[in-house]
Length: 236
Length: 309
Ligand SMILES: Nc1ncnc2c1ncn2[C@@H]1O[C@H](COP(=O)(O)OP(=O)(O)O)[C@@H](O)[C@H]1O
Ligand SMILES: [Mg+2]
Image 1: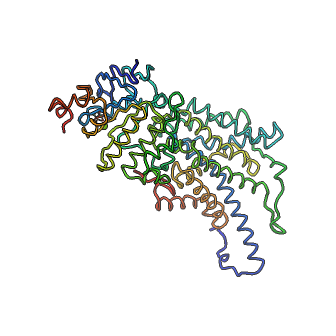
Image 2: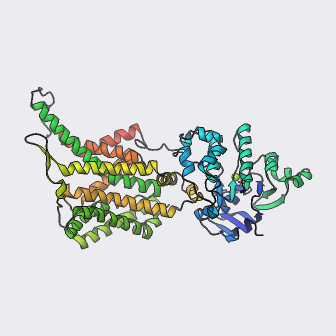
Image 3: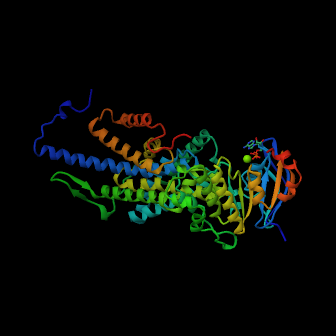
């Protein structure tokens, strides 16, 4: 069976500097992958490359067997990947509802798992603030909105960069809970975060990135079984 | 030097005389509003193209001129001003689509000097095309029969029905543009794209199509202004130049990229210009810029402009 996402020999460059050095990665349908590593190791660049947002990227990226390595971001989004960027990226001049509605789209094969009603049910806070402008929201609400907006595209795979960075513990907990719900609906997730314990709880597999290469990958329990292994690469 | 006699201000309130002033005031008010509304059509396209595509389009005034010539040409060819109006807007929209595809898309993300040079070149091309197609004669276009004539205000004064119709029509278009941008999903996408292009694309919005449509719609709005103005102004080669400059004033006044701001700015400029000519004829050409300077001191990014982050 073909994996949902198959990345081979992926390299990414910013000018002359090479940030990704031959990434090999497969993600199955409905699988949750935790992507970890110290700052500046290339986690965000990997997600942005998958989304088509890094202009200079080389190698092969296949989604459901289809080559999307050279596709523009809008085509990648339409073929089933949604992106929750680091630092949110909500539209501050649009209301909460408008942020959600502008992204609404049935998924591949016309699937409509996520509607406005369902997204608002998943995030009651957003329902309360539906008429508020994006820039009036707190950090946690903004993150909920970005995730909700990504869901409105009914993706097969959702990329979440720094899922809980800068959020209060209770809000972070809420984000992890919703990521679990999203997974339960059958979408695959690649999530970047610094909270190893939360990632270990959510993820089927953890992938460790160091200097643009995958240096370690495995089931959370297996990685935890070797003391000191994760600490070396992630630095907790 | 010149200027109105100073004794005008403390005029005794003679009966009749005062009501006469009120009439004049009302007529000037209507003229100012009508001018402002036409200006809005041109400036709203300019502000959208700048706000969303990030392109400075110096040729915007040339499309206003082109609209007026299309009114002249199509009215003569079809015998109907209404057909000319519809046909002119359609031609301008298609021209906008083609120009975006051919030229303007190359300007995205380029520096402003390149954009200014390219769109200045476009002015020359459009002027030359006008010269070849329509010559350089000054023309006039008759108002459609349905809207000919005037409304009697007093025994001596009438107000042309057509001017009133222009006011109402432009107001409807303005409301339409506002609703489109603020109340529809297309409008949400356009506003989102103006704020964060990359994120909009990552949500699956084909930005090429959005850009092309916004550019063509902006061009069509400028041409529409030229089309409706043709019967109340003369149609002449340089008519786009003054409009372009005033439109830039409107865009800056209202806040770059803000359509609602452009509406406020356009009315402000229209009224300032009209009343300036009545009350301070010697200063009238400066007055708009004085107002602009004052507004920018008060709000450096324009009346509804977004603050620099
Ligand atoms: N837009 C950019 N231009 C140039 N270098 C960049 C850019 N974005 C990231 N980098 C560099 O690429 C490397 C990887 O960054 P990033 O992918 O953001 O890492 P991470 O998300 O793991 O912290 C870093 O050295 C960073 O400085
Ligand atoms: Mg990062």
